[in-house]
Image 1 (cartoon, rainbow, N blue to C red):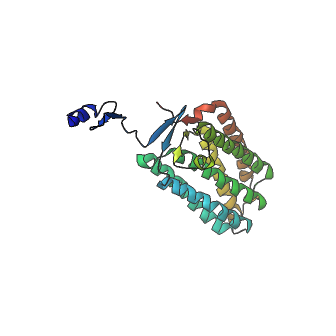
Image 2 (cartoon, helix red, strand yellow):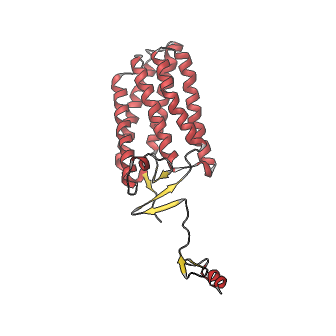
Length: 241
């Protein structure tokens, strides 16, 4: 009788423990937990794209040191290596579903911003990029990073402790960069490559390099406006639907 009753309850709203008459609710999936308005997706942060993004962050201070020391030949080679990690993490995340993560959607652009910021400051110290352009880029990136931290805070369910806030296993939102922002990142990296190569191939005062400064300034301002204009469309909250 107890076995039959137990079988009758399985697959429904709950199960009855044999001989105790106690109803036990079905076990919830471990991947997703809903608390309040938002859901939290518990995911593995150690995917290949995420590791490549972290490696790119690690290369940033190395590149900065090489540029300040005016070792442009080696810096150009390390920059190419950083670019390869950027291409690889995007390719892997797009083609293998189990390598795509909400954390990666934030970590990839964050790695780009850290790398670009360090490169532009270093190249400005080496007198290869004007201070005004670097200041514009740094200001935009600081505002965007602050916005990401704010979104993280707002979408994290209580209790909002530091350990949960900085735990990469709990994903609460996925970022979607705008098209112009992707173009801006490409233009900024092209300028970095051109600036690094300038002292190697002796075209530091080239008019083409100065034209690229203007193009980069334009795309930086335009991409900042695109985030302001599209706003919430660039953030996909992981909800309980």
